[in-house]
Length: 339
Image (cartoon, rainbow, N blue to C red; front, side, top):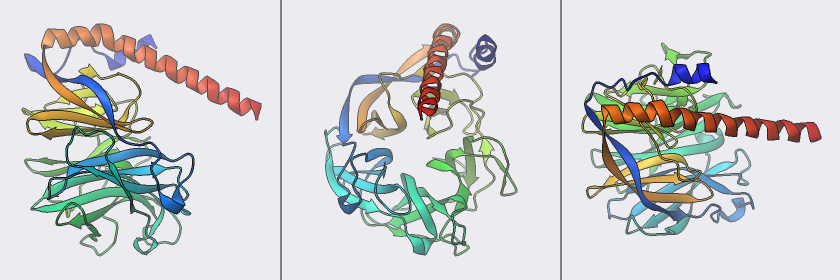
């Protein structure tokens, strides 16, 4: 483990900045969506709301759309449920029922997962991943699908320029960021060359496109080891911040995050965070036995302070994380041995 930490945590913080703003949780979490919402005939006792998106509709109402896993949908155990509220800081938003289910006519042959909404040109664009056969009758992987609407409430699927219902092959857990040269899509996947996926393990990757309609370039790795799930990137004051769950990295480039983490936001188990800025305030939403939200603030740290945190605190965090993983693997082995 010491050798691994030496590779992960260099002696100094490598961003060439005298100081850096880092996110800090500001206050307590509050629940915005229940863990097991009513899915009607598709409900099960084990329903679990997970990957989600938060956005504001044209009429000002806040929308929350999440996939609910362990449901009773026959071809895949994840479908989408929606909640809404008028005030972003409300607790327990109003459930609005099932929002979307897999569609065989779109060659969706399994679960749908991880919605993410962006607004461009007065239109709301809802991206998500789904299992597909890429035109064949049996599942062959995941692809990005896109819905579009004029008000942030009613959406219809938009096909790719090729006429196919899927827009590009991918892994899972996508999110989009508007940047100077167009759009970036981040997700859990594998790198590609000329559109062909390599055999590397899943990692956090990014693709570029001049518009939401594509074409999307090759997937390249962000350079971050560890948990590859649910990347989320925010640009603030010329710096890009990558959330790897509640661990935060910073870079002056949107496509490489090779320096060590600059912050760890760890008040309990929360996953797949989404960062929201509204009326000059920052918020973070995440899931974990329900859907939750908290306020964020930004605290300035000097280069020396960040380097000291990386040298002293980050190794302790990684050691504790490795120990939790070791215990989890031991429990899994014990369960397997008892079967």
